[in-house]
Image (cartoon, rainbow, N blue to C red):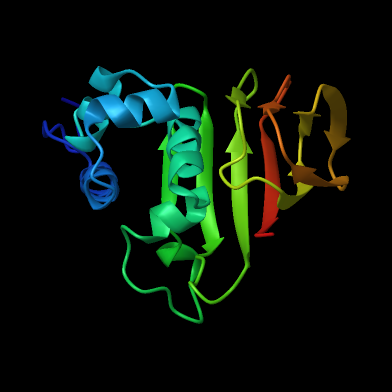
Length: 195
């Protein structure tokens, strides 16, 4: 079990809701843990522990599950929050962390079922490295605008060095990788548009 900010043991509230939603999605499809493990390429143990909120899922794990369930990460994360409002104040924007990768993700504009676009703020610490083996939705359009620091983005085996102010537009069909070599953290905006 993880330790909370106040030293309490037990799952983080977001991880608990996320785990429950992951279990619901699997149940809606009538899949066993073994079937989901095979489809996602993730161990049954990891899936089980994520559904029970015994571990906080990594960005790479959520990406694999989003691919299997046909939704973006923002869509999945928004499903564990309340109905998105038209105006979302900075203090109310959902934040999710992958501590193992040094990645913080803020849903600036939570997705809405009838809309195709969303904006995410990403922060990656110096030395942070996130690799996705597939897009959550094939053909997903992404625009990456670096606000601070520098970010190395690899798309279909082509690496792009992005400095503050640079913007990369891409359609994602295969693996991608986000790395921050440093010396400081990278802060960027990710605009996502469903195909």
